[in-house]
Image 1 (tube, rainbow, N blue to C red):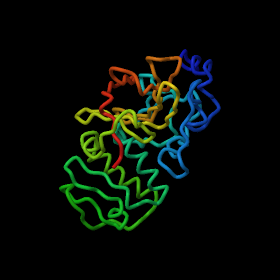
Image 2: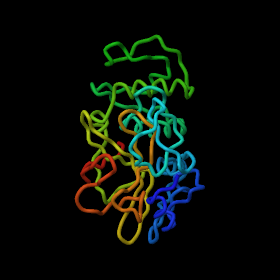
Image 3: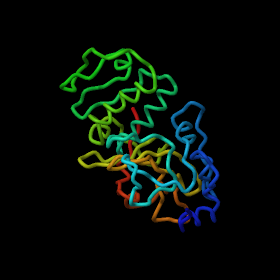
Length: 258
Protein backbone atom coordinates (compact mmCIF):
# COMPACT_ATOMS: atom_id res chain seq x y z
CA UNK A 1 0.00 0.00 0.00
CA UNK A 2 1.51 3.31 -1.11
CA UNK A 3 0.72 6.61 0.61
CA UNK A 4 1.71 10.23 -0.03
CA UNK A 5 4.82 9.92 2.13
CA UNK A 6 5.93 6.86 0.14
CA UNK A 7 5.27 8.73 -3.11
CA UNK A 8 7.44 11.64 -1.98
CA UNK A 9 10.19 9.22 -0.89
CA UNK A 10 10.12 7.43 -4.25
CA UNK A 11 10.02 10.74 -6.10
CA UNK A 12 13.17 11.88 -4.30
CA UNK A 13 14.94 8.57 -4.82
CA UNK A 14 14.92 7.64 -1.14
CA UNK A 15 12.53 4.69 -0.99
CA UNK A 16 13.53 1.53 -2.85
CA UNK A 17 10.47 -0.74 -2.39
CA UNK A 18 12.37 -3.91 -3.36
CA UNK A 19 15.07 -3.41 -0.73
CA UNK A 20 15.12 -6.05 2.01
CA UNK A 21 17.33 -4.32 4.59
CA UNK A 22 17.48 -0.82 6.03
CA UNK A 23 20.40 0.18 3.82
CA UNK A 24 18.88 -1.24 0.64
CA UNK A 25 15.32 0.02 1.29
CA UNK A 26 16.28 3.63 2.03
CA UNK A 27 18.81 5.64 0.06
CA UNK A 28 20.31 8.75 1.59
CA UNK A 29 18.64 11.91 0.19
CA UNK A 30 20.39 13.89 -2.51
CA UNK A 31 23.43 15.72 -1.15
CA UNK A 32 24.06 13.13 1.57
CA UNK A 33 26.18 9.98 1.78
CA UNK A 34 25.40 7.04 4.05
CA UNK A 35 28.05 6.42 6.67
CA UNK A 36 30.01 3.19 6.20
CA UNK A 37 30.55 1.31 9.43
CA UNK A 38 33.15 -1.44 9.86
CA UNK A 39 32.10 -5.07 9.42
CA UNK A 40 30.87 -6.64 12.67
CA UNK A 41 30.21 -3.21 14.23
CA UNK A 42 26.87 -2.31 15.79
CA UNK A 43 26.32 0.34 13.12
CA UNK A 44 26.84 -2.15 10.30
CA UNK A 45 24.54 -4.65 12.02
CA UNK A 46 21.75 -2.07 12.30
CA UNK A 47 22.08 -0.97 8.67
CA UNK A 48 21.73 -4.63 7.64
CA UNK A 49 18.62 -5.40 9.69
CA UNK A 50 16.04 -7.31 7.63
CA UNK A 51 12.75 -5.65 6.73
CA UNK A 52 9.35 -7.12 6.00
CA UNK A 53 8.14 -6.51 2.41
CA UNK A 54 7.31 -2.93 1.51
CA UNK A 55 3.76 -2.09 2.52
CA UNK A 56 3.77 -4.33 5.60
CA UNK A 57 1.94 -2.83 8.55
CA UNK A 58 2.93 -2.81 12.20
CA UNK A 59 1.22 -5.40 14.38
CA UNK A 60 0.69 -5.39 18.11
CA UNK A 61 1.84 -8.53 19.96
CA UNK A 62 -1.79 -9.75 20.00
CA UNK A 63 -1.80 -9.88 16.19
CA UNK A 64 -3.95 -6.79 15.70
CA UNK A 65 -2.83 -3.99 13.39
CA UNK A 66 -1.45 -0.92 15.10
CA UNK A 67 -4.03 1.87 14.63
CA UNK A 68 -1.56 4.70 14.00
CA UNK A 69 0.30 4.28 10.70
CA UNK A 70 3.69 5.82 11.47
CA UNK A 71 5.96 3.14 10.00
CA UNK A 72 8.05 3.71 6.87
CA UNK A 73 9.04 0.03 7.18
CA UNK A 74 8.70 -2.84 9.64
CA UNK A 75 11.65 -4.87 10.87
CA UNK A 76 11.51 -8.62 10.33
CA UNK A 77 12.18 -9.21 14.03
CA UNK A 78 9.84 -11.17 16.29
CA UNK A 79 7.76 -9.28 18.85
CA UNK A 80 6.53 -12.37 20.75
CA UNK A 81 2.98 -13.00 21.91
CA UNK A 82 3.04 -11.16 25.24
CA UNK A 83 3.07 -7.45 26.11
CA UNK A 84 6.80 -7.38 26.90
CA UNK A 85 8.90 -6.01 24.03
CA UNK A 86 7.99 -2.34 24.33
CA UNK A 87 10.13 0.72 23.59
CA UNK A 88 13.27 0.34 25.73
CA UNK A 89 12.98 -3.43 25.40
CA UNK A 90 13.28 -3.22 21.60
CA UNK A 91 16.39 -1.03 21.97
CA UNK A 92 17.96 -3.56 24.36
CA UNK A 93 16.88 -6.44 22.10
CA UNK A 94 18.72 -5.03 19.08
CA UNK A 95 21.85 -4.33 21.11
CA UNK A 96 21.83 -7.77 22.70
CA UNK A 97 21.11 -9.57 19.40
CA UNK A 98 24.20 -7.97 17.87
CA UNK A 99 26.38 -8.95 20.82
CA UNK A 100 24.94 -12.48 20.75
CA UNK A 101 25.64 -12.78 17.02
CA UNK A 102 29.24 -11.69 17.64
CA UNK A 103 29.51 -14.16 20.56
CA UNK A 104 30.36 -11.29 22.89
CA UNK A 105 28.46 -12.98 25.68
CA UNK A 106 30.30 -11.22 28.50
CA UNK A 107 29.15 -7.86 27.13
CA UNK A 108 25.44 -8.72 27.28
CA UNK A 109 24.32 -7.10 30.51
CA UNK A 110 21.53 -4.75 31.58
CA UNK A 111 20.62 -3.17 34.87
CA UNK A 112 17.16 -3.90 36.22
CA UNK A 113 15.03 -1.05 37.53
CA UNK A 114 16.05 -2.00 41.09
CA UNK A 115 19.71 -1.62 40.13
CA UNK A 116 20.68 -5.31 39.90
CA UNK A 117 23.16 -5.94 37.08
CA UNK A 118 21.76 -8.93 35.21
CA UNK A 119 24.55 -10.47 33.13
CA UNK A 120 23.91 -13.00 30.38
CA UNK A 121 27.26 -14.65 31.16
CA UNK A 122 25.71 -15.78 34.47
CA UNK A 123 22.40 -16.80 32.92
CA UNK A 124 23.99 -19.03 30.27
CA UNK A 125 25.74 -20.99 33.03
CA UNK A 126 22.32 -22.00 34.38
CA UNK A 127 21.88 -19.33 37.04
CA UNK A 128 18.46 -17.73 37.35
CA UNK A 129 17.04 -14.56 38.85
CA UNK A 130 15.94 -15.01 42.45
CA UNK A 131 12.45 -14.23 43.74
CA UNK A 132 13.48 -10.77 44.93
CA UNK A 133 15.05 -9.97 41.52
CA UNK A 134 18.23 -8.78 43.25
CA UNK A 135 20.55 -11.75 42.85
CA UNK A 136 21.12 -15.18 41.35
CA UNK A 137 19.88 -18.60 42.34
CA UNK A 138 20.29 -22.06 40.83
CA UNK A 139 17.84 -24.20 38.90
CA UNK A 140 18.48 -23.44 35.25
CA UNK A 141 20.28 -25.44 32.60
CA UNK A 142 23.52 -24.17 31.07
CA UNK A 143 22.87 -23.19 27.45
CA UNK A 144 24.03 -20.87 24.69
CA UNK A 145 21.05 -21.43 22.38
CA UNK A 146 19.19 -18.46 20.95
CA UNK A 147 15.94 -19.72 22.49
CA UNK A 148 17.47 -19.59 25.96
CA UNK A 149 19.03 -16.21 25.20
CA UNK A 150 15.49 -14.99 24.49
CA UNK A 151 14.36 -16.39 27.85
CA UNK A 152 17.03 -14.16 29.40
CA UNK A 153 15.82 -11.18 27.36
CA UNK A 154 12.21 -11.73 28.49
CA UNK A 155 13.39 -11.27 32.07
CA UNK A 156 15.13 -8.06 31.01
CA UNK A 157 11.95 -6.87 29.28
CA UNK A 158 9.99 -7.60 32.46
CA UNK A 159 12.24 -5.95 35.04
CA UNK A 160 14.09 -3.21 33.11
CA UNK A 161 12.78 -0.25 31.12
CA UNK A 162 13.33 3.34 30.12
CA UNK A 163 14.10 4.42 33.68
CA UNK A 164 16.90 1.90 34.18
CA UNK A 165 18.25 2.15 30.62
CA UNK A 166 18.42 5.96 30.72
CA UNK A 167 20.62 5.73 33.82
CA UNK A 168 22.81 3.07 32.25
CA UNK A 169 23.53 4.97 29.03
CA UNK A 170 25.91 7.91 28.70
CA UNK A 171 25.05 11.45 27.62
CA UNK A 172 26.15 12.34 24.08
CA UNK A 173 26.31 15.53 22.05
CA UNK A 174 24.12 15.55 18.94
CA UNK A 175 27.13 16.60 16.84
CA UNK A 176 28.66 13.18 17.55
CA UNK A 177 25.54 11.15 16.73
CA UNK A 178 26.14 7.63 15.37
CA UNK A 179 24.09 4.55 14.51
CA UNK A 180 23.31 2.71 17.74
CA UNK A 181 22.76 5.85 19.79
CA UNK A 182 19.48 6.21 21.66
CA UNK A 183 17.08 9.06 22.29
CA UNK A 184 15.53 8.23 25.64
CA UNK A 185 13.30 9.79 28.25
CA UNK A 186 13.23 7.67 31.37
CA UNK A 187 9.95 7.46 33.25
CA UNK A 188 6.62 5.75 33.69
CA UNK A 189 5.78 6.13 30.96
CA UNK A 190 8.93 7.13 29.15
CA UNK A 191 10.04 6.38 25.64
CA UNK A 192 13.13 5.35 23.69
CA UNK A 193 14.02 5.22 19.99
CA UNK A 194 17.25 3.97 18.47
CA UNK A 195 19.28 5.47 15.64
CA UNK A 196 19.66 2.71 13.03
CA UNK A 197 21.41 4.57 10.21
CA UNK A 198 23.30 7.82 9.63
CA UNK A 199 24.17 9.84 6.54
CA UNK A 200 26.17 13.04 6.21
CA UNK A 201 25.96 16.09 3.96
CA UNK A 202 26.97 19.71 3.79
CA UNK A 203 24.25 20.68 6.26
CA UNK A 204 25.23 18.02 8.80
CA UNK A 205 24.02 14.58 9.79
CA UNK A 206 20.69 12.93 9.12
CA UNK A 207 19.45 9.67 10.62
CA UNK A 208 16.82 6.93 10.67
CA UNK A 209 14.97 5.93 13.83
CA UNK A 210 13.39 2.65 14.97
CA UNK A 211 10.97 2.07 17.81
CA UNK A 212 8.58 -0.26 19.51
CA UNK A 213 5.82 1.25 21.62
CA UNK A 214 3.04 0.47 24.09
CA UNK A 215 1.54 -2.08 23.92
CA UNK A 216 4.40 -4.23 22.62
CA UNK A 217 4.55 -4.17 18.82
CA UNK A 218 6.71 -4.82 15.80
CA UNK A 219 9.82 -2.67 15.63
CA UNK A 220 9.18 -0.02 12.99
CA UNK A 221 11.26 2.52 11.07
CA UNK A 222 9.59 5.84 11.81
CA UNK A 223 8.30 8.24 9.18
CA UNK A 224 9.32 11.88 9.45
CA UNK A 225 5.86 13.44 9.43
CA UNK A 226 7.32 16.95 9.54
CA UNK A 227 9.42 16.65 6.38
CA UNK A 228 7.84 14.45 3.70
CA UNK A 229 10.54 15.29 1.16
CA UNK A 230 13.27 13.59 3.21
CA UNK A 231 11.18 11.10 5.21
CA UNK A 232 12.03 8.77 6.86
CA UNK A 233 15.29 10.64 7.50
CA UNK A 234 15.52 13.19 10.31
CA UNK A 235 17.92 16.14 10.49
CA UNK A 236 20.32 16.25 13.42
CA UNK A 237 20.83 19.99 13.31
CA UNK A 238 17.27 21.19 13.67
CA UNK A 239 16.38 23.61 16.45
CA UNK A 240 13.69 22.97 19.04
CA UNK A 241 12.59 19.39 19.70
CA UNK A 242 13.17 16.14 17.86
CA UNK A 243 9.57 15.47 16.85
CA UNK A 244 8.90 11.81 16.15
CA UNK A 245 5.38 10.64 15.26
CA UNK A 246 4.48 9.51 18.78
CA UNK A 247 6.96 11.28 21.08
CA UNK A 248 8.97 14.50 21.27
CA UNK A 249 12.54 14.41 22.59
CA UNK A 250 14.97 17.08 23.69
CA UNK A 251 18.18 16.89 21.66
CA UNK A 252 19.95 16.59 25.03
CA UNK A 253 18.23 13.23 25.54
CA UNK A 254 20.61 11.56 23.10
CA UNK A 255 22.67 8.83 24.79
CA UNK A 256 25.17 6.13 23.83
CA UNK A 257 26.25 2.77 25.18
CA UNK A 258 29.08 2.67 27.76
